Length: 292
Image (cartoon, rainbow, N blue to C red; front, side):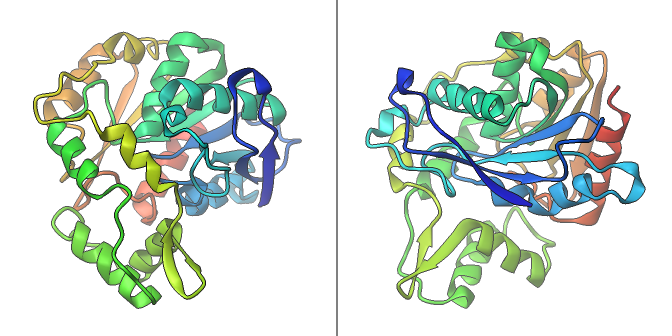
């Protein structure tokens, strides 16, 4: 695994740096895999999956890139929260792929990352060889979005990893009912960082401002045309059994509208499945192996 940076382009007033994690070799003939995280998430979310995909054992040995959007993970923070926007993030993604010399790949997108995958399918279809959409579809349920709004950018004073793990567990216990102690610890390390004796968020708290206008009555944009732009590539749709972002009806409609849409439901998890358990990782790896 390597830490890499893509220098940002001045044409869109970008952040000082864009960071990504790189696994595997650039000299493999297998298609690369690009992983895009959720709204407040970061490249570390894909570490366990990326190591499986990049491992030479089993004939995989793929090159995997996991990206940090601006304001998340190890990427720089933007001075203007208004640029924590899908449009600017799309430019960041394209900038990073150009710097990394990725011309096409299989994309894995969790939540907001899946929105980016659908948008790329509509605007840059030649980039996509296949796609995995982790608990996201063309319609986002407002109930789940309001729940996300309630916690983004907020963190009580936490001093120890034990407190951080318990804070995560309490907040997610209704939707994630069968996560091991070891996986809660891993998820906490992906979510927080320890600085000067205090647990800190691994993203700019100003991201919360992007949800200021969201209310229970907000009309939300539907992305069915962008989803249907994926019709020429195989797609694996993943839904957490307890998800409040991707409804069963939207998930079923996605299957109707896509000729090569596979479905996976992750039992006892909500939004979004953590991609830490072996069965889910195996299912994604098997799908990636089958992409032409």
